[in-house]
Image 1 (cartoon, rainbow, N blue to C red):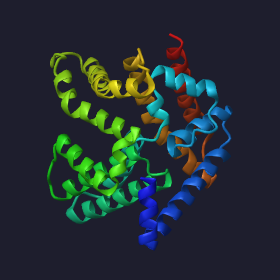
Image 2 (cartoon, one colour):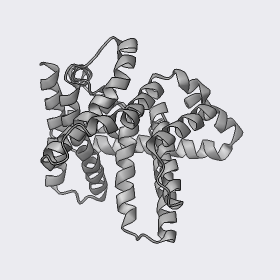
Image 3 (cartoon, rainbow, N blue to C red):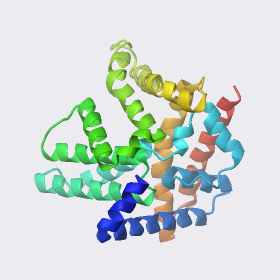
Length: 289
């Protein structure tokens, strides 16, 4: 994708300017994160990794814990992260109303925000996949259509490989599409195994577990082929790591925004730090099992 961006920059100066602006803001975001005074400096490093993809300041033992527990995908910017950003932006913009004009503005702003975020964080293959998903989803909403996940997956792959054919050999690209393929084809069968009349909380837990199993069935062989590793406790890891990540990202964004305004209550920054510490500690425990 990076090579393809370079080609676009030579052909379209306005794209070059947009990319440069996005990357500059990405670096500025990293500086903002560094300036937040958490008690544990590892918190700054993990938030920076989760929001910008920069893992250079994460201590080796924490990186190893993420890898051993099967949570490396949490640290590598992917569709998961852009998906959370998209949901936050979409929910906020939905407050403006639901008429056709409002939906059009919301769709444009969602696409612009996600595109800018993708460029600011390096536009990796898995991020581009998620961005194409967002664009297709927003266009479908404007047309009052509900496209099937399998159709979105196929369309996204065709678009991405048309733009950058070399992505087919990118590991992130392969793992990202393999994970979505598992959700699209395997998860519908697994989630229906659990009885419909069971407790809602148990069914929700099974739904999350079945998503993890579905993804692992399709990404596991690739991970073994490339890295010769297979996490034994991937279900436990994802049941803990994914909900925490879904809380950490919006909490971190709120902490950054309020800190920039100089009005961040201590309770919010401490709550963010507690969530980050809980994620790190939980994965370290799992990695030792």
